[in-house]
Image: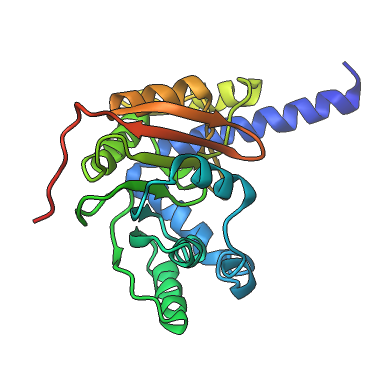
Length: 260
């Protein structure tokens, strides 16, 4: 190995180990705080008027055209500053939405008001799903699934979504896709899990967990399919091009949660 390659290897290994140590030290509230701070700083894109008026991404539009043709009422999670809300409302869908960032939800409400769109938009805690009714389908906003730490928390989140979707209804998720298990990811998981064990915390840092700017979990197809299955969905579609996304179909045997 050349000196330059060795230097790159050492820097990457050190960075991966530091991420693992930070993940091992942070509790769930700390992880939420890191991600919230990231979006508070990200004014250049997520709060931009042109971005939010830009409509659905091509892969989102394709997934919706293929799997949401019968959907009239929609639950939108992680609504952000309004991009998906504006685009979905323009398609004639009746949307109810929720978001955990006070800054983003304020932006979204202002945009909806300017557009003359009346949509229920609820502020929630991170990783929570409010009871808003029964819907034909659901969408979780761009990349939001990747910010939920821990498989158990992701499955619980999906189950709360499933409880408000009719049997046969579609759910669109998007996430950072893991195409392989890199040395850096394995080192992050191992170092983080070691710290958690020393701190007597049961849940390990999972392969694919990262902490660079915000918490992100990189998922592969088997993982996404398994978590959907535990929550009462069957995987109908998966792609990691150009961004990880999947469509699950709500199983008939899973119960509906009624809003109060």
